[in-house]
Image (tube, rainbow, N blue to C red; front, side, top):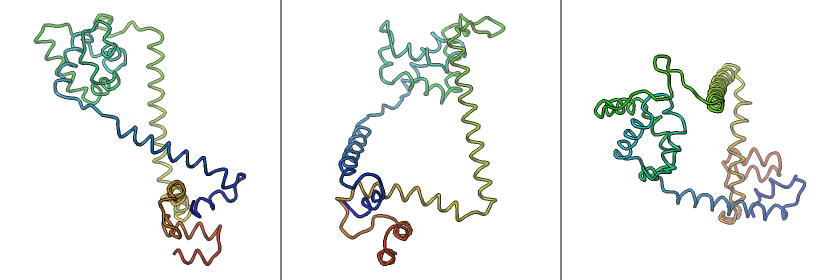
Length: 228
């Protein structure tokens, strides 16, 4: 293992030798995960997929209410009565997200198909005129959770923008720079430790300024100067 790994754990409670098996296992797990992710095949949506989805929604969810939910797509992929064998091409969440991303276009095509086939345009479980749905308590609760989640995410985004703006106006460039450099330094250090057997002895895999910064705190000044 390289000097980077030893420096990272020299001040820890455990010795270097006790950490070596852990990082070795971690390295293999990361490689396995990357291989599994690379082996996954993503099936793209085709025009035929869209056409079949239009027909399905037009018949089984004629009104716009409920089209963005989960139920109709879970029913589609479950295919309990073997009516929609084509649905197995994608997971139910994929069909749902496909509709959500192209909602305006899908609704237009669904209306056109309903007019051609003389199909109803309202869901049977909605009261005509009021568009009030007879839903269960569970469905109401799920919708309420989604709204709270969206509101929370919006607050986080707005708060992040405010904090960035305040940092820019404060003029504390030195402190901000320290925080920015700290993250890539740790990333490089962990990667260097895990891949140390591929690194030539005596070389520093970290960015020069990060090496100098780290060594100035934990190693002798002479070695720091040689790496700059």
